[in-house]
Image (cartoon, rainbow, N blue to C red; front, side, top):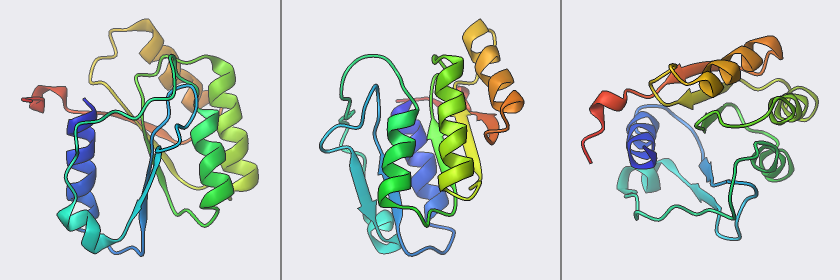
Length: 145
């Protein structure tokens, strides 16, 4: 799933204009090697190295949004890949950072293409309720890795 997301992201980044793009890896926190910054030229040559940079177990949204607010306050949009397995407070805290520190920047949440899981449906509902962007689903049928 991570590789599909990164492949699709890099293809998209090859078609738009920007000065820099950033990938922030986060599980329950952002690891030391968890921030990658690159230009469009570098994105054209970028290849996923197969490593998943995780800091620990579980998922928390706030640490990635905190890094973005602290290091990249001029961000124009955020795309966040998640399985949706978080609590209400995670969505609320991410929303506070987006609204109060990032000027209500657009957020696109990419989830697995299966809303049959209760926690995914809950996550989608929370994103709507707390107005923290929009949700979309990765085309998991394209996963051929």
